[in-house]
Amino acid sequence: MSKRLNLREFQQNLINQLQAENLSVARVSTLGVQIGGQNRLVEMVDVGEVLSLPALTAVPFTKPWFRGVANVRGNLYGVVDVAAYRQTGAASGDINNRILLVADRYAFNVALLVDNVLGLRDARNWKQYQVDGQIEYQDEQGTFWQKLDVSALLGQEEFLQIGS
Image (cartoon, rainbow, N blue to C red):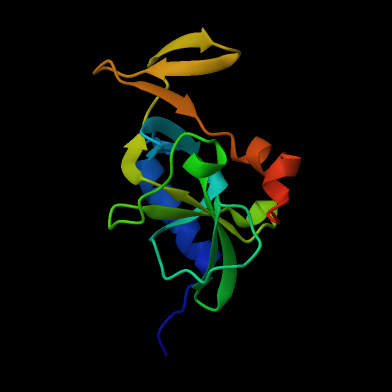
């Protein structure tokens, strides 16, 4: 009989291999996304999964930024258009759009609709500026980024009130 590994053992083995190869897990701790034409950084610990935009089922009498409900492997997720919520535009619904499933640790079945995923980013050595009480980052190419604080977003009373 072949040896079976559980998920925890598999993850630990993978971490051990990465550390043995002297790769830093902290180096790729943020995901770059575009929301309403603006570059944002999302902490990877806040993201459970990144998926293409699935078919959405509209929910009547909800605010315009609540795009509907998506079925992801038998689990229902409310899909929020982050740009529309922040009043900086709206996601187009095209092939580049992605949903970020919020990490299980928040106990919210919500997916954040973003314009585009730009990949993993290492912002540790980027220039930082204080702009309107928020930290803004500038990468090596001169592009500006702001962090999307998922925890704060989920804590906003307006975000939790989807009914119109």
